[in-house]
Length: 382
Image 1: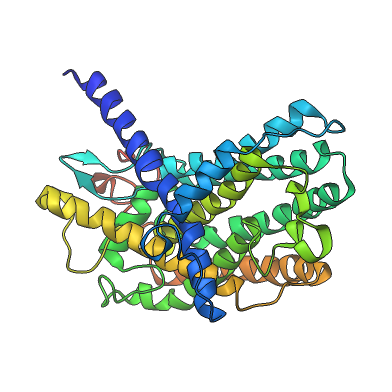
Image 2: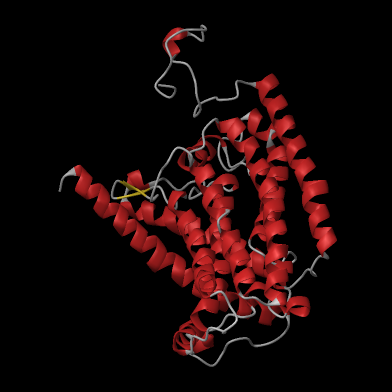
């Protein structure tokens, strides 16, 4: 098999494996997990009839959605009404393409597309998800979905700003937008928010621990807002808007909205793990170059971290009350925006006075020019 054919074959295999074997089942069983965890919190049983401990409930739900009548109300704008659920689901799945979900397996890197603008791709594609909600609310020609769509527009645009600003300190430190480089930096120098999970003697990591925790907190809370999860679920507030932007939807189109939210939760958790929690790395476990069994363990570690974050998503939903809309906007614009901005300047000052900002993985001059201006540039710049 020539290299091009091998590349195409392995890429298709990774797409099928990660999307159809891992992500879609995770989406279905995230719903099951939410129902079980909420039942534990509220002292109920939760799903318990379909299969042992209700484990086949997601399969029964999928069959129900597929077999229900696909009803389209007469008063809707039909083209956009059909388009909206696809726009809600596809961006959440597409974003996972640039996330490294493991080291290597049989010498093949465990990332679908290792592009050098990975984080920009994440924000560019993830921001398209708002169109599905807005178009769904507008195309329904009904007051409650329309109000949900309007709320979602302002909410997601507001928190995207905080989301983008929160990751800038990481790329000031690393000097590279490639997500595989972010993971490699954390392997070499300690995780962003857990410096001792790596080279704990690195003084720069300890100096940056507090700014990185601030970035982590802002980013994680902004992900809650971007995925419309409690306490930020104003676009679909059942007590106010019946069901929000998907009030007029039923059967499989409603299921796409529903699954799109959980897919966005999984993708958001994957980004948090990659940027702040060392990606697939776990101290003491070598990468896939030491054998395929370690490659599988790295993949398992990555998705285990995601499962922990999904539990936190569910826990928060059944613990905190919903914000008022003015509180939601105030938190995004008055607090998070300013905190993230000041945090960038703090990290820049620490890097300027402590060490060169791009110690290993960023743009740097070749060793032969000894930092002389106008000297020969290294391969990273070339």
